[in-house]
Image (tube, rainbow, N blue to C red; front, side, top):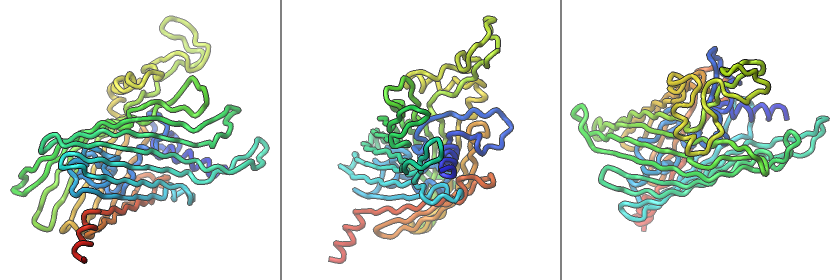
Length: 405
């Protein structure tokens, strides 16, 4: 019970929940807090091998998570992919995992429909009473079900909109601190755009891409019935660029960069009990009056705009809330790929810093990818994280069937 509970807490920390669990920074830690942080995890191996960058790379079957607008440029009429990642294996936990299923269907030359399911299992957690006696075992789990529409506006520009239902069942209705709990639910949407253009670079044919995705824009979530308070889901702004250069008829290389920022309030600094505020009043209770920053208990539209200027440390702290992903991908004859990347987050905002590596193999009908994560910090909970992805091209399957017939 204790081991699994600690693992779950570290899981939340490792993806942005509570960095004090592993941060070695001596600065003031003030990470942005959200529920359902599993929505921010890179679910597929291709982007996972490129430092978690994917908003502006070439489209693939897993584009739903990164930028649904990319589907309008995807080759082929239909496809499906599945990805799986054992999670927190470095802690010796064997039943925490994340799985992702995605697919798309082209309606015509300009329109594409896509769907996906992201599932996170936190394994089995035994519950005990106050005396340590076992009560029952629960299976905390979360999932997000998506549907998206993408459309080509011009030869170079596309847009996409996705709708998402989010379900988070962490307690299975158990009581927490004497309070009844329930699964949390939320509805959200993504609004995205993608631009690509053929160019010439260093006397070589190349393709330039730009991507922008406002994701998880949706309602707050609560885990208590009739609760007067609720928490923000990880509303996020992701933007980036990528350039692919055809070195020759067999070799091409892509370099990409993504920048992310959570569009939710930063926790302000409150006066402590006994402090005297600017009016000369003595503070009598904790968390009642803000010393620096802004009130985080605001509506979703206000929170989105406020997130750009509400950090108690001002502009300097706001800039720390941006994470950056760098990625490189090399393809030989469109059949074999190797990838590398780096993800960077400020020490005071989560302190996630890690290198990634990966490879891919493309056959006529399917593509296999895997990636590996290497944190800079020793004994990090994300160390040795592996991701495996498998994607099928239904067009190639039908063509292969016809050729054999």
